[in-house]
Length: 144
Image 1 (tube, rainbow, N blue to C red):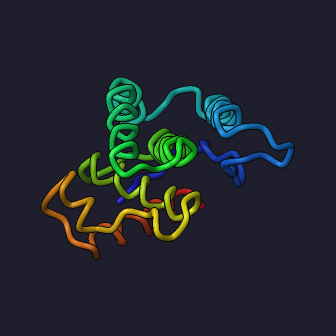
Image 2 (cartoon, rainbow, N blue to C red; image 1 turned 135 degrees about the vertical axis):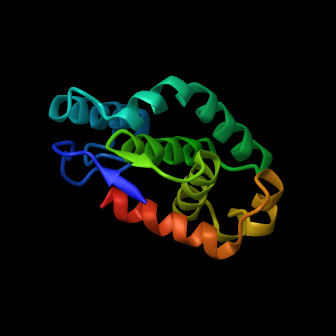
Image 3 (cartoon, helix red, strand yellow; image 1 turned 120 degrees about the vertical axis):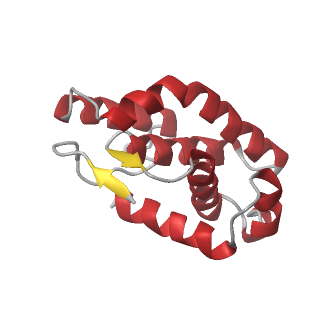
């Protein structure tokens, strides 16, 4: 599902660093590390960087619609950045973003605040619960 770009791994990256810096600072440090190790981004990364602003706004709107925390938005965007800057998606980007939101919500939100699949299907119809779970698994594997 994802094709890994060579030479772009910076070890294990986490959404909050050991020194307690905020996720934005850690995401920036992670991106700088990736750039040092892979100064020529792959085709997918170049395309992603061109449409990133619209996608980040879309993710923020979806998270607002479901009353998710701002930290959930940041973590979801960081997941997308980390995966898409080193690999190319071969599936629909909005579904990938929804899976990133679900992973972030499961990490940062209380269990009752995590959106359910039927609610997400209103945002992007045409996928099943299994489709979303498969996408989440692929993201987790790509982040490892």
